[in-house]
Amino acid sequence: MKNEQAYLQLCKDVLENGTEKMDRTKTGTISLFGKQIRFDLRDGFPLLTTKRVSFRLIATELLWFLKGDTNIRYLLQYNNNIWNEWAFKKWVESDEYDGPDMTDFGLRSQKDPEFKKVYDEQMEIFKKKVLEDDDFAKKYGDLGFVYGKQWRHWKTSTNDTIDQISDVIEMIKTNPNSRRLIVSAWNPEDIPNMALPPCHTLFQFYVAEGRLSCQLYQRSADLFLGVPFNIASYALLTHLIAKECNLEVGEFVHTFGDVHIYANHIDQIKLQLSRDVKKPPTLQIKTEKESIFDYEIEDFEIIGYDPHPAIKAPVAV
Image 1 (tube, one colour):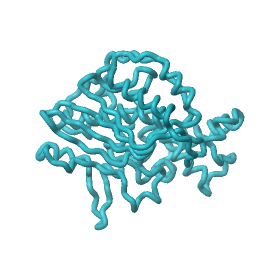
Image 2 (cartoon, helix red, strand yellow; image 1 turned 60 degrees about the horizontal axis):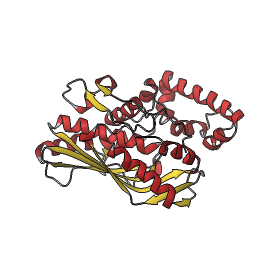
Image 3 (cartoon, one colour; image 1 turned 90 degrees about the vertical axis):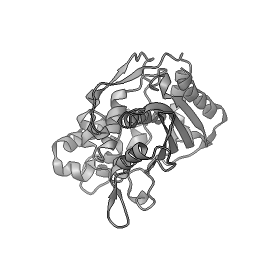
């Protein structure tokens, strides 16, 4: 339970000591800079219990990254809508879109119930097209330079590609004491062409006493909606890589640049803080696979997860 308390204490810290700032999404935030929380992965899987967090969404997104995929079709096949808004934005801003005006759809759908009905209708049309129309999916479902691309197909100046995940696994196996066990997603050349410049800038592994630890540096962190997913995602990644390298798990260390609470998430955070922390669940990897890239969602099971109910909040786009 100590692991979750670290997250909740950070929420309190931002609420009490953060600076009010305007942001790209025009929502407004309370933020702090340069914070860190730690999770001992031997003490249970860090899926928050003060609100329900969907492991299925977390795992399918991570598998999407690991496959090097950048098209939301894979996610939609698993009813995972995490990245929909970024692809939808590309469609409604294109010359081919001839539907109702979707300007500032993120904010308008939160404030205008009538517009939200229209927005939901257009989103359903969009999702159906991505799932059923190959050409449409290729054009509007692909997000380009996002994590799958950077992790598995980093493009070099000589037009070669680097598979950073495969390389770091090989380095952990052959040179576990290296201080270069790093995967980077921040490529300055690609930033102007990205749907969203990577929030997870880089992560580094560390091996000691037969245990694998991971530290993530996150330049921008949505504390209520995003961070609980990020914690569990990188915990799962650490488990998978540790298993492939015949190691036990150590810590997940989460280091933040701008860590913030959106203005329209404050009530939700306060509700979450009012709840008691419960015993964390455990992760079971049910299937032996030769490679981390062979796993599917059916290979994982979360045991003993009994959280408080989910708390809904709007996504800032």
